[in-house]
Length: 224
Image 1 (tube, rainbow, N blue to C red):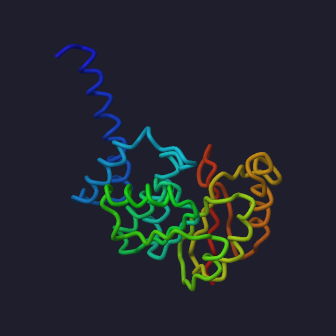
Image 2 (image 1 turned 90 degrees about the vertical axis):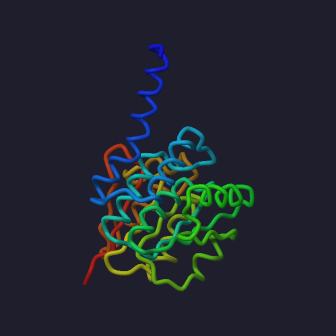
């Protein structure tokens, strides 16, 4: 075996394990057949996500949020082609939950369905082709986890629609946020700075950025 091939195999193994080991350590669980299938799919698709999907690091943050808090009733606003939905549903497969995810674009919706199936997570996902502006206010709830990653200028409206349905202890996570009042959002679809300021103003929520360097904002609804 030549040196170049050995290096390629080694790098592939490192990338493969980077998906498995962090989640196994955090979950404190042994790997299942579904874990292997999901991890294998994510590694295969690792460098192919486009269409405004979240980066892998934010996918892992979403996984952690759901698993750590044992959320079971999840909503995703903006499926794209399914990267974030796969991370959320993977965690929900361990908590006994299910994800409702909404996408308005038919092509992206079809691609997401195919990705969910290949990843082995279709049973944990209710993927809907619909306009979130109409559907989200109509959903009955209750919800304990919401991930918002659709039209940025509508973030505050989505928040106002889901907050009454969010259980105490629940989390509203929102993508493409700067964490600075009035910043970033106005140059990236509009409304993000206003959204973050709005969430900070709500006394019933604790709002912050999920991690240093991430554009994922998290708002936890206080208990009691």
